[in-house]
Amino acid sequence: MYELWYVSCHGFGHITRCIAQIERKLEIDKFYNCIIICGENQINFTEIYLQKYLDKVILRKTLTDIGLINKVNSLEVDKKKLESKLKIFIKSWNNLLEEELEFLKNYEIGEIFCDISPIGILVSKKLNKKVNLISNFTWYQQYKYLKLDNYIIEKYLELDKLIDNLYIYPLNLDFSHINPKIIKMDFICRKISSQKIQDIKEKYGKSIFISCGKSAQLEKIVVKNFKGTIFTTSGVDVENKDGTVVKLPLDILDTQNYIGASEIVISKAGWGTVAECMCTKKRMILLEREGVLEDTYIINELKKISNTISIKIEKLKELDYLDIK
Image (tube, rainbow, N blue to C red):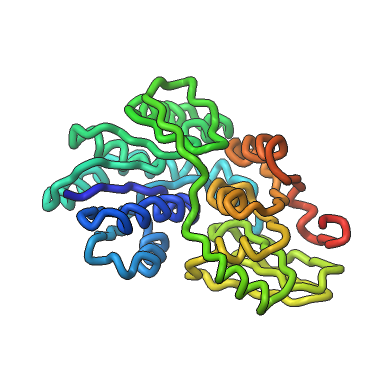
């Protein structure tokens, strides 16, 4: 019996929070087996991260989602390009569904979990399984907020109405447009190693973590008056005038430990990074993206409950540590 996970291939936050749960199940249940279906980059990452469990995990690469598409060198959503991609994607749903059913006929499937992938919802219904959505938002909410074409909004609303069980993370959007069974979740992230955090601190000293997500590409960020180390991820070009910069590799498996070792985290307000900050009790400077409902809501809620401020993306061009610390 295989538990089936369909995960959005938008960025890496969705796959890392699913891996966090799957890893725990693999550790405590010797009979647990699962199939994880996601995009190529995310599956390549998962294959390395769950390497010691590959006898119990089947990985499948396929397009599970479109998510959001940013303008070049920006975190602003490119609505025109996004609408075009989504219309093509929606037309492919039937073919993708047939391909998935052909693949899955060789396995006995138990529960199916969807981290907002439309394909997972469609497969669940076709196999007469409960639609278990596990998230803090859906694409219907995001696309409605962006005022995309009504055709797209209606198609994603139809999917939301199919949800039977909603496993809901903290900092969730309003789900009053549907009425599933609600199961509340807590913040979750991949394993945090206190020893690794200590090792990073001893090696690099005082540090700041700057990330805009592995799917983003931004122009150069200049930091001044900081004599420590700045950790960055792919898509961010940082110059530290008074200290050093360490660019973490794309396939790094434990960004959560570098977050845990840092004094301040500067990031877009994706749920995965925020959860890692909450679990390691970090101060956050989050980037405002007015066109993204999830980010805006998370920022506003975090300001009420944690040590968090927000800044406009334009201010990233030059940061003064003496101002932000």
